[in-house]
Amino acid sequence: MKYNRVLIKLSGEALAGDQGNGISGEILNKISSEIASLQKTGCEIAIVVGGGNIHRGVAGATSGMDRATSDYMGMMATVINSLALQDALERRNVYTRVLSAIAMQEVAEPYIRRRAVRHLEKKRVVIFAAGTGNPYFTTDTTAALRANEINADLIMKATKVDGIYDKDPMKHKDAKKFDKLSYIEVLNKDLKVMDSTAITLCMDNDMDIVVFNMFEEGNIARVVQGENIGTVVTK
Ligand code: UDP
Image 1 (cartoon, helix red, strand yellow):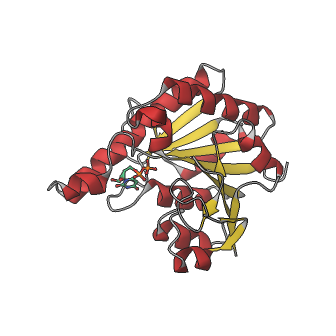
Image 2 (tube, rainbow, N blue to C red):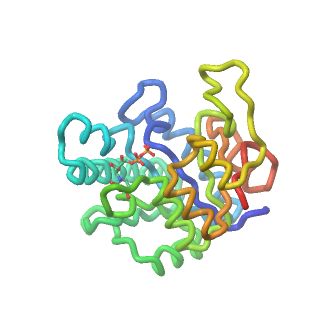
């Protein structure tokens, strides 16, 4: 294995599958199966799940809601997704812990960095819920922050497409895929990989990101083995 400790970023939207919102049982099943196989290899796995399938802060703010309140709703949405993923993993006998950045001790452990690391050392899958705990941030930034905090070797950004393109490959037939990009190229070209706060945090701390298609079976394991799939964002 090329990477021993990884942080997988799943968007909320991905969990919704074709239905567009809510949580798809079929998708949960697929993802948890891939993660369970990876865990068997001994790889230490942390996960950050988004909340866009349930609520996005900006969307609420656009329709007149107070931005911070709307963002807190978004963070709650990530907790719902985290619990769903925990349940799917535990049905496959994968030990998991949900660590929440917002205190809700009846549902999840509080986020404590040292505890997260200990869980990882014990090969439990750690799911970071409630984002950073602060409004005006995203779960991409959460992924960048937590990956650095736990000394992950890599951020694996799981998407519906097989990497980063110069334009939307769903809309443009001539879209060109990049195999490798620098952080600064991502920022300058304004490529929609992760938001700029997340990219900057990765750039300042040399945290590599691989963007890959998580819907292709075996891809999660391929990335961890160091196979050249997707797009790598690095120095
Ligand atoms: N959010 C936040 N602070 C954080 C992380 C998330 O306020 O540290 C809120 C924000 O409103 C965001 C929502 O939670 O829109 C859901 O997260 P995100 O949009 O990143 O989810 P994804 O796009 O990955 O589904």
